[in-house]
Length: 248
Image 1 (cartoon, rainbow, N blue to C red):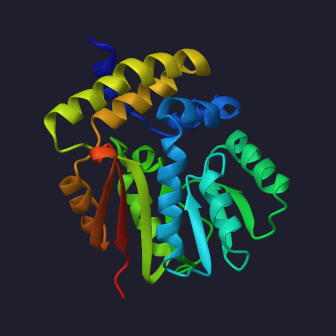
Image 2 (tube, rainbow, N blue to C red):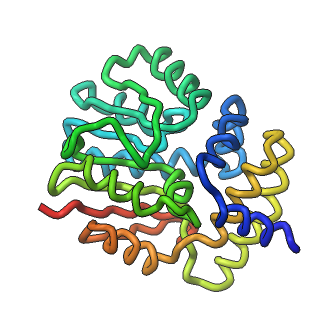
Image 3 (cartoon, one colour):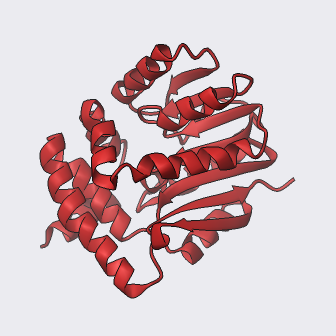
């Protein structure tokens, strides 16, 4: 059985928090590898998502799957009046996030550890929920996808936005082939070696190559209660910002 098939089978059978164990191992090199493997484009893409979030003039924002806090810190720096909550299941990642916020002396961002399937927030708490490069982790071959999306919808205010920045599937066949090859050979191979966590980067590469098309993503979100889904492709469709709305 090929490595991809073994990984897919393992993910289909996943229970508990298999991804948490993977990402708990890589926080010290996570930001460095993101910059290296994307040629720093991850910062540009995340910055565009932050601008889209700020277009809503939000009072409260949650950065779901915040990891090392890149997007949460960016939002907090944009406007001291916005209250930002970074939420993630990885304690080591959150320690890195807290140090980032502390170095910048930000008092309008805080970080909470917990499970995205059962979040400790009241209904209608946030004007915007953002998620940057973690949406695959809660939806790709994940048995709890429905619960994660239900919780996200619950925490949003009516009319609130769910802003997703994530890898995407290029529509051009040649671009898609190059994109998939890059993930297979570079992200999986190089990322795995440099991080010392081969499983995490094999998973990242596999999930990116087999992730939803725009049409499939729209159906997924709308099947779980969101509406008015918009897609904004970047880098010839290799990445995209998707915005979905909680109905009034």
